[in-house]
Structure formats: C-alpha cells, structure tokens
Amino acid sequence: MAKLSQINRNRKREKMVAQYAAKRAVLKSKAEDMNVPPEERFAARLKLAKLPRNSSKTRIKHRCDLSGRSKGYYRKVKLSRIALRELANFGQIPGMTKASW
Image 1: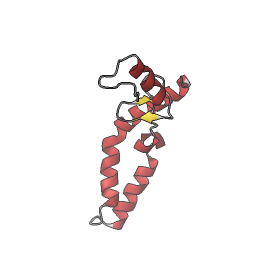
Image 2: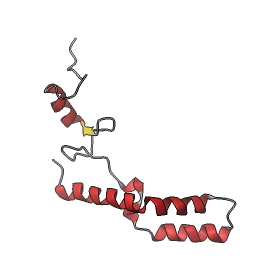
Image 3: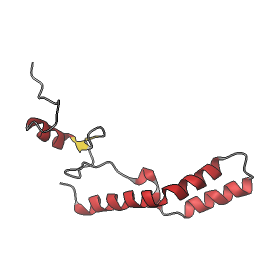
C-alpha cells in the first residue's frame, strides 16, 4: 500500500487538472497559433506560467486503483501488476486465466 499522502496528493492534482483544463487549453492554443501577433502569444505564455504547476496534466502519476502503487502499472486495467495477479488468481477478472504449459 502506498503512502496515503502520495495518493491524496495525486487526487488533488487530478482535481486541479480538471479545474484548469479549459483555461489551459485556450491559453495553449493562443500561444501556439502563429497567426496571432508575437506580443499576444508571449502574454499567453506568461499567463500559462502563472497557472498552478499541479494544473498541468503531466504532473499526474499513474497509480493502482486498489493499492496506490505507482510502479508496475497497467493502463488498460488501471491496476498494478501485483493487484492484477491477485485478482486474476481469484478469477475476478473476466477472460484472464493463469498460464500453464
């Protein structure tokens, strides 16, 4: 089990990303649009820099939904390798069986 503070910090970042997503998208599109005058693009870049760091999507860390583990994470099922193996062994994941040959 991961530290609860790490899990909570990541949840806080996810909320902040959702909160600032629209504002960030508008500023990014304005900053990257070459048809806009350079002064306006620069002003958009400054406004982007003033937004909270945790409002950036790249600050979110993938974590297991069950254990909070960050390493060995499978995006398709949103679980760590350990939690995935436990659930598969108990037959709780449809279509997944233990390999034997």
